[in-house]
Length: 335
Image (cartoon, helix red, strand yellow):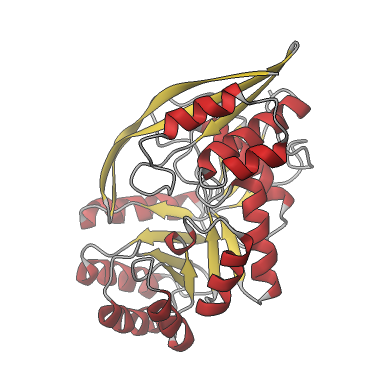
């Protein structure tokens, strides 16, 4: 086999606001593995400022993979354990090499029989911009909406109150994602206010890296807490188990590009289910190549909750996609 990679800069259609700032573009790397006349494509979706493998030697490690592509999968996984976005690119390319076309995880989903319910994501911005996004998702028929919060809580809370006045919890599930935007004491108050609004869950209310404080919040919270950034950089199975048993969250959210690829996500899922912790899967601004693979993987997990998958519609220069969104159902359509 031989392997190569190329960089691609994805450009947002409009600037996308998060608690970490406004995003205008997204860097990613496309990995190609060839074996005779067969070819497999994968995406190494590095997320600058968030991925644990955002390191100066990233491309050097990617080139190392290309140079050592004929090593065993076990040997490569051990070497790439701290580079989850490179490892998932390898996993994708090998799955695609095996299955051909645009296939990674063949299933009824890729046969066009089945769909994945997803949440509608509302980006941060001015109140009128956020309300416009919300109305668009409601018009499309979304049952579950996720709002980014943690920049201007007073305004964000009012928007949530407006939504809940018009849509009771049995008609509209509301999730929020703070990206670690609150301090510990403030988070306690926010959790109470969210409970009054019957919010389904809050992702990462405080910054990652203080498991004792997060455990305290999870033990007493009236609003279910989902860990997200807290899982980044935890790549050893024993460390994963220790983290979950220490914090005991209500949910974990898995971004395969950040949390150890498909195999690493499977480890998290197994541990979560053993410990009575809920979970769902979320994309992380991948191009349509990575999104397609993650959607196919997600369908095989048979989780009935709305998943956090993107639709590929954020970028002006994305790749072609087999994925189609109808209402809040993401499906795969054969070309």
